[in-house]
Image (cartoon, helix red, strand yellow):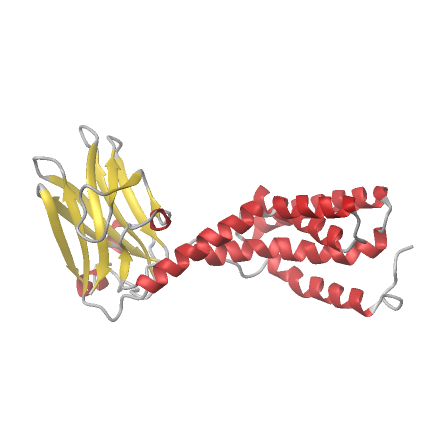
Length: 301
């Protein structure tokens, strides 16, 4: 028989209060496009937490009734699908990953509330193993966040694969040509209309610096031309609303130094928000053949 609020134990009331307090966050707040990966992963972990609490809360209602557990699991799946669908009306995308986290969280909480037995212990272990993808992502994002924040004002030095996770594009680390440290980022430029890389998020506050510097190696025997683009979080995707600079790369190493004031005043109708830089992009256009450049030691001075 289902418990009424009056007859519900204090522990169950506390869990219910937690669920009610957490429920609105499915539809308000949350990370935007520019959010740090760690913040995004922690927010996603909230799905696991909410449904783990739900699993603990419903455990006394189901106890050893297998049919009730299956019905509750089906209800969790249905509620999860409804939540993801409704989130589309508040500017979020449908996520099967969130549905997965909900189901795993519910199983984890429900199993942990059961009386210990060999079978329950085995099922608890299975549920824990199902959280591995989320926990692994959390660990990787925490490493990335720690690296980016502790090395600032060095934006990227490409000393490990952790740093390369911030880069979008076709890249790999190499040690043959480097200006600082033990490795540099090799960037493969294709023959597509636009080909390059973007370093996004965790770029820090640029307001107290005067120069953006980076080293770019051109392994070719002839000059290569690429474009450097810098945008803030207010960028409206228009050419005149960002910083654009052509770079003529001579063979060998090229030391690039750009005044921060030039970047600040690059947008036509406003000033660049140096506290919220969104991305640094290097790209080439319509190469006649594939090309390669190396990027190293991106920093502020």
